[in-house]
Length: 89
Image (tube, rainbow, N blue to C red):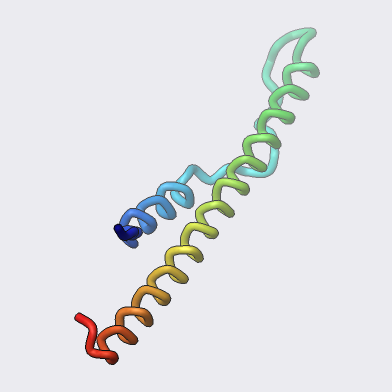
């Protein structure tokens, strides 16, 4: 019984997490909503801020996947080299 990780699958996961849309950190212009314009602008600002935080956190998760992939590949290569050096094929 063994286990393994496909480094290419991890690379694709990183690319997916890091490839999201760039979200600005400011709200869009206030909509023309008559008497409700101020409330709508406040709502849009809150949604925009939350979306920016979410995008930042998803990007950070992508960075962690990339870091884990690099560690896995390094460990796997070192282990394979050690086994090969010991005559294990």
